[in-house]
Image 1 (cartoon, rainbow, N blue to C red):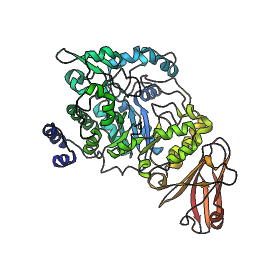
Image 2: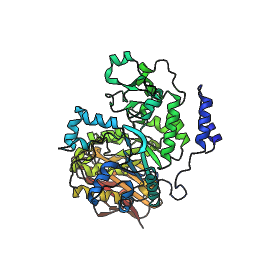
Image 3: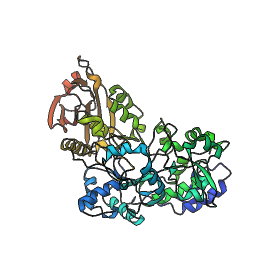
Image 4: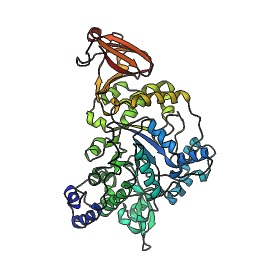
Amino acid sequence: MSAQALHSAVLLKDETREPRLAQLDRLAATVPAEAGADTLPPLRLHPQLYEISTLPWLLRLGKQLGRSIGISDVPHTEWERLRALGFDLVYLMGVWKRSPEGRRLSRSQISLFKRYDECLPGWTLNDVPGSPFSIQAYEPDPSIGTWDDFDALHRRLHELGMRLILDVIPNHTGPDHHWITEHPEYYIRGTLAQYRVNPGDFFIAENSSGGAEVIAYGRDPNFAPWTDTAQLNYFNPGLRAAMVEQIRRINEICDGARCDMAMLILNDHFHQTWESVLGSTPTPREEFWEEATRLFPNFIWIAEAYSDSEWALQQLGFNFTYDKRLYDRLRDGFVRDVYLHLKADLEFQRRSVRFLENHDEARAASVFGKSRLPAVAVLASTVPGMHFFNDGQFEGFQKQLVVQLSHAQEESADPEIQRIYEKVLTITDSPEFHNGVWKLLEVKDTGERTNSDLIAYRWSDSSGQKLVVVNLGASNSTGRIYFDDNVLSGAGLRFDDLLNDRSYERPTADLKRWGLFIKLAGFGAHIFDVKSIA
């Protein structure tokens, strides 16, 4: 991208326009094209992502290999395995240099100890490296690898047809980040009077001249402050420029970023959270994300997003945004709400991240149990959007890994859950699910009034069509599904149930008159491959 193009893309409307344009001139010369764009095929419209908590994963692999390893030592077969499972994206969570001060706080906060006890009984202080979201610098953690190691991994994944996703943590840094001393103006700063009134919201730091600074802890206004972090000030133009530079460096070794708590730095959200400290500081005319996504258009932008901010973040350039609402509705068992959720605008859904677990949520096996898991796993893996899976999910692990810990208690894989995911992943690697056209279907009542627990939809493209039916209720359910005339060609349709290894044939005349009769046990599912009978 040329400097001229950057100038036309970024509308700078405040008094810092000229200095910022000069910075963008320098940046324009260093913005690379998408790494590997000439060899990688386009990302599938509905891709698969696999999250790995990097440090615990390396410790586990190292134990299997009998030695300590970094990211460059991971056997190639591990990456090949993920590709064979159909993954497009590998998200390595927690690769940046952790804050020593954040580590000290993680080791001394009694409020965290109960979670440590649940995750790792008998843990010691050496098992607590600190939160990967309290970082000292955007540099690879020395225990994980180097810039060169990640550059090599980036190329290796491209050779396998996969892309690499890393963290961007925009809202805060660790409390000992070098910006604290060098650029305290990059942070939300309070006064001694504010500190006296709310000492739990601030900490005292030293600047480069030895003076004292009152710095706010990072926070989401709905929760207590994160006391192992320092809150960045997105109303400061210098901070925005510095964060763009950090993203530029990250962009050189990966294909995209999972942006932690992305909604917290939206202008309105930020102003509401920090109004009492910002005072008369003017609100920027442009959103930070609008500028960042415009500067790096080939980057894959994934937003961790809540508080109904998803649509707004998509409009600002995010390719994908978390869909926590679908997760909540599946967890709570509100089938009607799930159905209505799936009636949302299709483009919004295509850019939604569907998940049953991630590093912030409890393990899917513990939330849904074996009885519900087949149904919710099929649905979350086959609706439009990005399909997000977490390391340990396929094994049916029960213990959520606390991010401040280096590992969790060892668990044995559950063969039954492994078989469920193995089958679902194999089936859903078909092209219809990733580049096809999706349509939500209505399930009609058969007279038994049990159809309300059934959700059905169809995927189709030039290679064929798939029909998915899921029973999200605990009891047997029946219903009838009717098809458009363009589907009912030939003498009839053959339905091969890929999940249950059974086949059915129905004449066209019967399908037009009666529809396809469905009877599913509680929390059961069908994934049909549908073919015309000549």
